[in-house]
Image 1 (cartoon, rainbow, N blue to C red):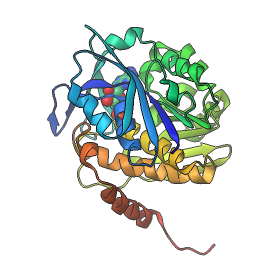
Image 2: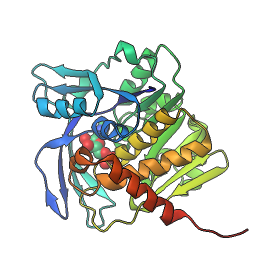
Image 3: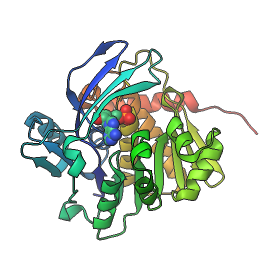
Length: 307
Ligand code: AMP
């Protein structure tokens, strides 16, 4: 089985959407990536950090999904990373209310020995220096390195972010972040500029408007499945990244045409994530449900026109 190494936050989130509000619940980029990637045939491990305020049941959940958590450090007396967000009525935009780095502030990641030869590395949202440090620890060059980031790190650690971006093959970011990173409004121009920074493949996530994959002059677009009910978009981007990297890990194929499939798998899994608050939907999701919705994706996008 191929190995996927995941880096990112394991966190407490407090979320408010037009449909309700949660207290501190399980969140974090690596949590969503791990849950999503667990739908593929692979071995995965998370590198992250939490405080000793983090409930064992959350760690047990990750273990129950066959995720190796030996790379999640538990800091005695430390407080877990906390993020709080408020979604606007359209659910496409949100305000970050609180970001408390806590134990993340001094985190020195340690990649488990048996994952230093991972096939694919998924650098989830986290301080870019932590993302770089994980790459430094790899003993074998990964077949593909995927990086996800957000405006927070562009605002407070841009030089470090640009350094790690140089070292990755694929970057996944949302449309506003692509504009911020490139200084270009047009997403086509933004993707071209971002490719000049290092990544040969640029994935731009557009929430309910789907995702774009750029590579040289080629572009692929996947819609998001039109859903009746969206409760909470938190983690959709990370779930997408987990589906994308999980599929690539399982299929061992890093061609552009296979990445198109990966985009569909990522979009498919993300469509479930938003149906309930936090990780709730991903925790109970079955492979059968994933397969049924994949068929819906196919019907949504297939047409027969002779050209
Ligand atoms: P998404 O909705 O895909 O952007 O991901 C939301 C998740 O990212 C939440 O579960 C948060 O805990 C986590 N998160 C929010 N801000 C940050 C940050 N600055 N760095 C790393 N993870 C973050």
